[in-house]
Image (cartoon, rainbow, N blue to C red; front, side, top):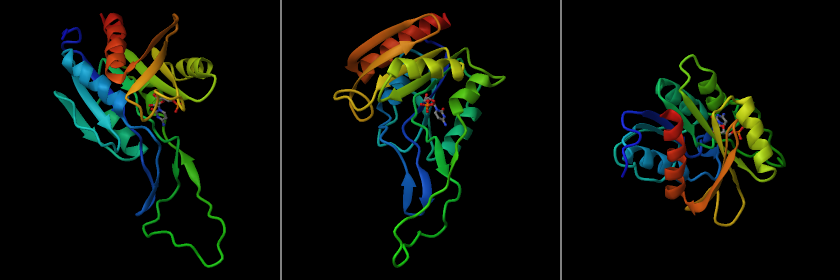
Length: 218
Ligand code: C5P
């Protein structure tokens, strides 16, 4: 295995976040964490010093990786910012965009005859955009964009809006790609152009993505 990233400090976020409604219920999403864990594993194998901020997933910690487990978007935000400074931040987590305004300390009971329940949600902090705007901005800030339609257009918009160096777009809802699959296909977009990676295993794609990062960090 090459040591192309020897001494480089990389922070990776992976997995979903769970936003608690009450002690029994939460809002989550279908991210498995596999893509981010594969990136962390490959980066460590190439000699990088890797911090992996992981949402609630059932995956073993890759060899040589420092793992910080979190549950909510708020916890992920705190863990990622406290892991700065670094050379590259790779935001592969599917962070909740909204969280309940209040978490009920008791299980919410349905009332007799109740037909609807209103949950008020408030926006979470955009971790990726904050890292990119931070005075401690890493040299490379990489985002992921899972989309169901107009994949390249929405991703390019995020690249500019969040001031990223690269964005890895993938289409969710396709067989053999996306959230729960072992395989994926990525469209890696930068200000200079775009490059299609895969379809391939998430491990192979992680290696190809890190090759691009190593070139840019060199
Ligand atoms: O805007 P959208 O959520 O689709 O952007 C996805 C990218 O932004 C991912 O890289 C994700 O990790 C990051 N993100 C974040 N904090 C949020 C929402 C998304 O870091 N609150």
